[in-house]
Image (cartoon, rainbow over the protein chains, first blue to last red):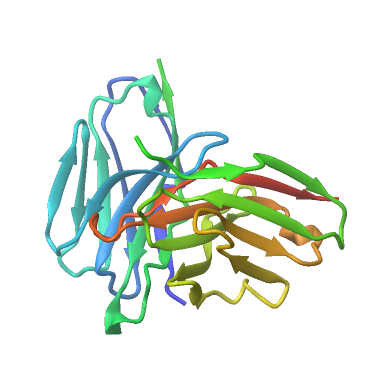
Length: 115
Length: 114
């Protein structure tokens, strides 16, 4: 099946620093989604990307859909303590119209922000 | 804001027992999903459900698993005879037709098989 490689696995940063994480795939996705998961909670959508090359922001978060459709990155600017959590990329491929929305998730990036 | 609701939040069961995990998707959504996350690992797709039938399932979703939408609001995942390796967080998700490809997740049910 399709695999997503997400890096880095974890990051320990100081409050105020910028953060960057990315996902790469061996195959094409038509949609990239970035989710955040906090302890004991389900994934919460941060940003959705639908077109190759698309760059989308949500507050201090910016994500891009790679032009090859095989990668995506997420940047967080001026991190704050509440940014702590696990960030997951997820890809969706509706090639052939047979997929009803199965998401393939990356392994996650654990973000720790020191005040 | 509408949300996906899952019950119970934590289920403890003995190996070999049947469990039913319950989900109430967002009310006007038509596509429903179950995912699993083993502790410390990534979220994995189990099954998608649309128009009262399974539309796609993964290799994980074997004969021990079944899904049902019994009454038009609940969406359930049944594991007939639980194994130790079924211990995980189980997430329900739902999707409407307006917001493109966006799945909204519940808070999950932690299943502990002893």
